[in-house]
Image (tube, rainbow, N blue to C red; front, side, top):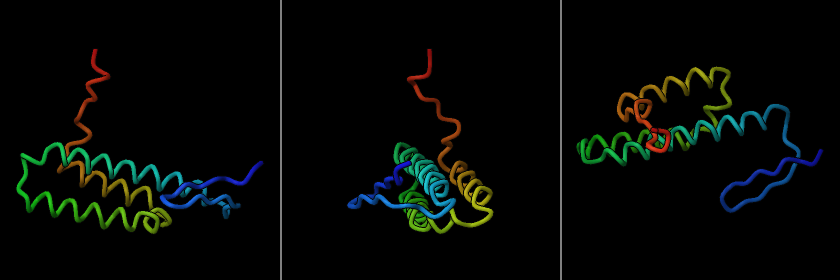
Length: 104
């Protein structure tokens, strides 16, 4: 089986990964995508929030995204990130959004 290829902005790395790290990378990327969805949802709702609220939420998202690899490596990562995502969902309401493409 060939060594996994990891694509990161500006890097292409092909090397053996330590046991469990491939799962952590995919989990980290999944989490990253979820937080980015919240950021995009917040942007779509910008007109409904004060600039201060937008700035505060964006700053929190930026901090979390910067530490996501570290958070993902914790034993309780799923519970921790799930709690953070629920907190952002209170603001963005992302879980209540329906993709227009799925409507009949």
